[in-house]
Length: 258
Image (cartoon, rainbow, N blue to C red; front, side):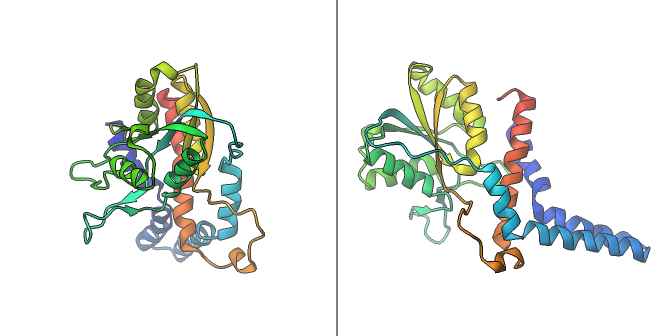
């Protein structure tokens, strides 16, 4: 039930909904002044949520970017969290297509290749909900298949495919790696934006965590002049992810997950 409610909450957290609501309210108002306020609010939200410079400032204050693992340092386990690394295409159902967060998989491969991790645990299961949403990506298995094609031996890749959210990622990973809790440190690999909640969940389940950021979105280089004024539709998507992470931590604290 919590998983279903979290997906419904996603709708309410969408910045697009926030922009539309004042417009809908304006249609029901009769006084010109109130209509103007509602429309102005919608425009103000649109400009704020699509502003690239504001979005980047928020990213810089939120994303965790842990230092790279130095050469010669080795950990037994790298735990890779799924979510957006693979996408399903109706036109090519047999093709394994990479998604927006595929950098998580690429960084995991680099860590294995350099000897920073010896084994990989991919955690994440199907997120379909009957009559609400469909997930046909089969992400964990397909990430494993791609890693094998890239040269990682199958014997060093393990899959946990029951987890549907970050809390369950930590829960089921702790069950699989119970012999390593407290004794070893795991390298936790996920998107930089998602690391805060992930670290809290895994530490709550007894793991010693060495975070490793992938899919870093913030820009440290100076932004172009246009980014301060030109609306950027991608900022809407990024702001949605940021809002989800902030609210996710608050909800997880209320639930006792972290």
